[in-house]
Structures are given as C-alpha cells and as structure tokens.
Length: 92
Image (cartoon, rainbow, N blue to C red; front, side, top):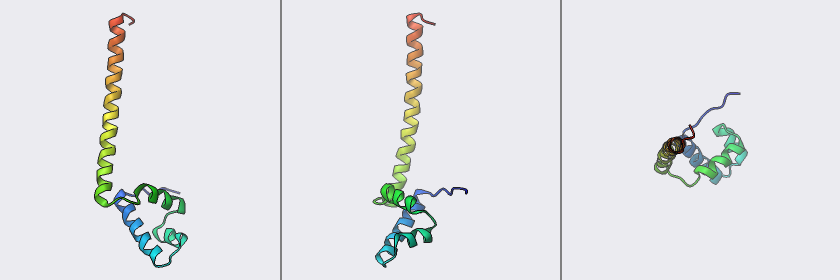
C-alpha cells in the first residue's frame, strides 16, 4: 500500500478537526477513519503537532531545513580541516 505524505498544514487542520469531533463525543477510532489515518499516526501527529499553529509549523519546517543545511556545512568544513591537517603533518 502506497504511503501518502501530508504537509504540516494538512496535519494541523486534521488535528483541529479531530478536536472538534472529540468534543462532540466522537471516538478516536471514528476520527481516524474519517481523516483516513491509523490511530498510531494520529497519536504521533498529536505528539508532534498538537500544540502548534500554522505559523509555528511553517517556522519549524524552515528551522529544520536551515539546521540540515548547517549540519552539511559543518561536515564539509570538518572534512576539509582533517585533510589539511594530514597534509600539514606529511601523512599523504
């Protein structure tokens, strides 16, 4: 079965819809069936996105992207440093 990817905005809107349905005496099973995800996925989403607003989710995505870019940059610089250290010591 193919997996469907949801954007953070879609996830937050589904979670808000689930909150409304829960307030109207819906069960978790019914809610998950309505939004088309498993209970495990619902709880994982609630744990990660439950307290976020749309703006916060967008900002989180931007920060994660920036963090990934910086990690790659640090890895490249560390590799360059190690190569220059070996050359300076004459171990090439």
